[in-house]
View 1 (spheres, one colour):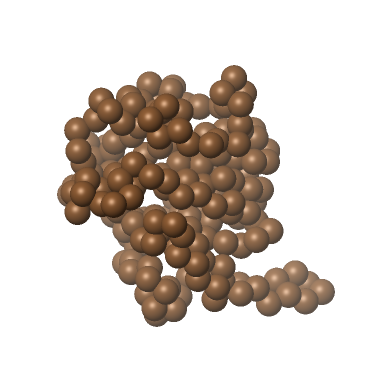
View 2 (cartoon, rainbow, N blue to C red):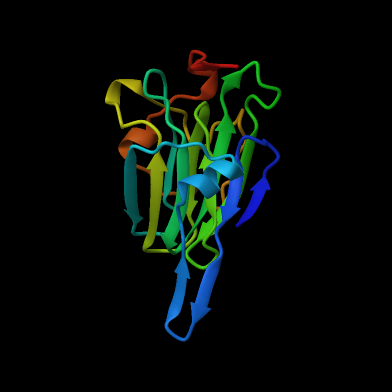
Length: 185
């Protein structure tokens, strides 16, 4: 398995091998021992699956605070996304910085985003499906978020602001400057 620590080393890009033949391919997308050796601890308690109909759909930026802080292992099973993680750990040397990677059905890459990070993605193709494992269950009271186009974060989204598709909930999220510190190192 190819393992790449990104500019924020706690966020890891993983590419499990694919074994292809005339039928297609086979890939082991999760193996607890191999992923733990690569720095993805688990355990995972829930799998999530989303479908975004249009290219330019943004989901995020989301996180959960204690007691239901979530780490996420994200992969794209159809289409392609630009996946982003923003460090929200106060006291971290990379606080407020982001890393991103393209995940697609073609490249089979997965992104490990530990707790303490905002997570979001933008679909690059129509009919994109994303699956991700989380280390804590969804809890509405623990859910937090930051507006996708916060000028202080200056994320280089691959969609024009006027073309983005957002949920009403994501459209109403506050900027990071209006949020209390949610995580500390």
